[in-house]
Length: 239
Image (cartoon, rainbow, N blue to C red; front, top):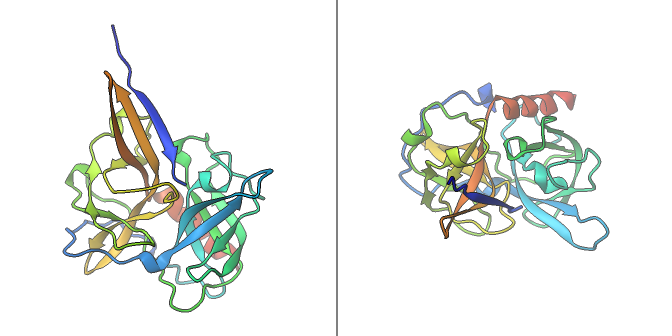
């Protein structure tokens, strides 16, 4: 008799263009909270709003706009809508309209749960822009990571060797970072050359039921060439 594990995913909702990197161990807690904003989307036929996270990307071409990375499910589910009536809420409560978006046109699965946004204006002064980077080593060799939150300084956590138990084209990974509902889109960072870079972002929590027990862990997506290309496309299309 073959027993299959039941998995439930709970969605919580560049200079040189991100060269591949060799990660370094974190000597201290990372910064990056200054690059986080809220992605706010009204729920259909309701006065409620779905709030998830987005983070500003360091794009040297940007002058009067911002480019952000977020989750695709944050704008109405994995069947993302081009005309979803969403907006960006800054750290001081200010609102920014969404001018354009890019997302995967592939099957609506967790592997394609990413969204790149361009705002119609630049953020207020003092906003941090984060650097994207693709992983250049095996996840098993990756040192400490940190999931960055607006509400508190992030603590070190780890990539988990559990990617074989969910459908995955190599773009997803599991982690043991502390999360809560609403943190979808939060950047996951490592230290590099005295600074910090974003190697992925949080999607939600997975609950695995097997043999009468259950385990929970975080699910996240790596930064890859597809996301980098979407960032470049949105930045260049603004002119």
